[in-house]
Image (cartoon, rainbow, N blue to C red; front, side):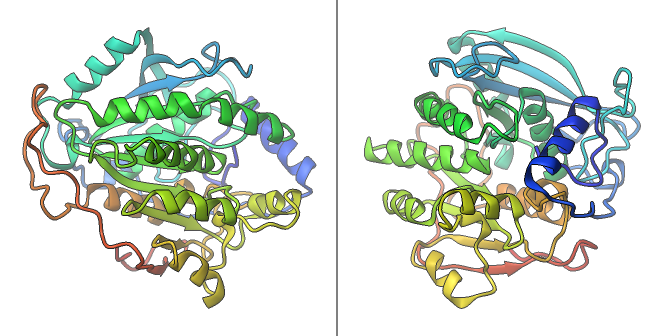
Length: 398
């Protein structure tokens, strides 16, 4: 996991950063934003409404994992295991950070803490998600599926999703799909194999979520190699006749996707009408390294949106481009989507934006049959959106 200046690190995470720097030869200075406190922002959605500002924010995260054990890095056979986790976010949390202790035990008042976790079977997993959706209205009926990237442990992935939910003000149900990443910078090829093995499990998860009673939309946010995994899975679903997840597919947001441009063309050819966004930065050093390892083949997440030729490559595919090149958060610029407050708030705005025909109906466990399906925008339109600098001045127009 690539970490910015604002991320307090424990010993294990410090070791990973040092390994990353040594292996890649990067000596870029840490940079980031001065974010607002979680307690200082206006709470929206069911998740944020009743919590006193001085109390930690508890976020329930449903986890589907292809790791053979809770913290195993073994490849496994792709079988999914399910659990419910509760993550405690400190009241003084700063957007763009994951506060962790430098040493010693984490405190809920100052740090992110996994306060509860319980395994469950597939049927209970589905029923609990439906139960959590019951009684919700508007965007709070939505599910956000987060697919992490290369070199990411279970702990890093679930804390990252909790941070995204808090900073993006997402009031729906968050679901983490975690695959058996080796959580090591030099294990790129083995991670690619683990992601490949996980495609069927992710496909089954997305299919089942799309059939959940009372659901609004299923959004997918995927980072780095997880972007390749998500797009491959959606492509296979489309070939099987269910590319729009029973009419419930919402935003597909690819953050720094480690996807070959030629492969991306094939994936998009199957996802006609899907709302796909790419958060890209020409200065993403991790993806530039990935490109060199692949024989200088360009990666979608490192496209230079300031160049008309590069924009044209994605314009043909009907995706929305968010140009993050002005930001400098993190060691390599690979995790800007979550480290820069202005960017994560833009993601949150996209997730909560009302679509024509959806209304603000209530979700109940036995509802959903007659609910209007999400309306996708006309494909073929590309908006290049250079976001404001790391100071965050100015509004980002969706």
